[in-house]
Image 1 (cartoon, rainbow, N blue to C red):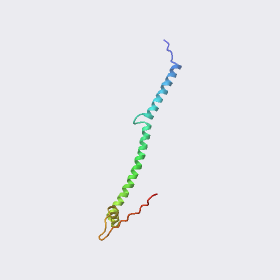
Image 2: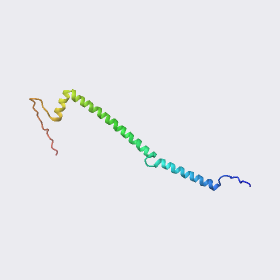
Image 3: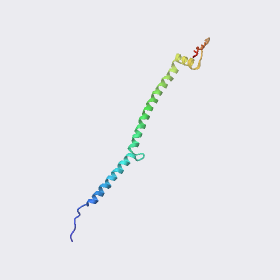
Length: 109
């Protein structure tokens, strides 16, 4: 009994194997790029969303600081509170009179 040694793959088989490997690689790359929820595109959109939310968070922190300062000023600064009441609500002190002057309107020709 003589054993015949295998020489390996034939030329056509190697060519077919290369095509299969190439197509599999393309499918893997396409899945990495476009697979819903786990792709590079999803990652890019999430990073963009994180940046936008971080910016919004900073703006809200600044607004919160401003409002906290405003609250502190309203609680401690009576002159500021009086000024605000006069401007916003039109409040007057005792024995004060308000005079309103109408501005003259220029008539066009």
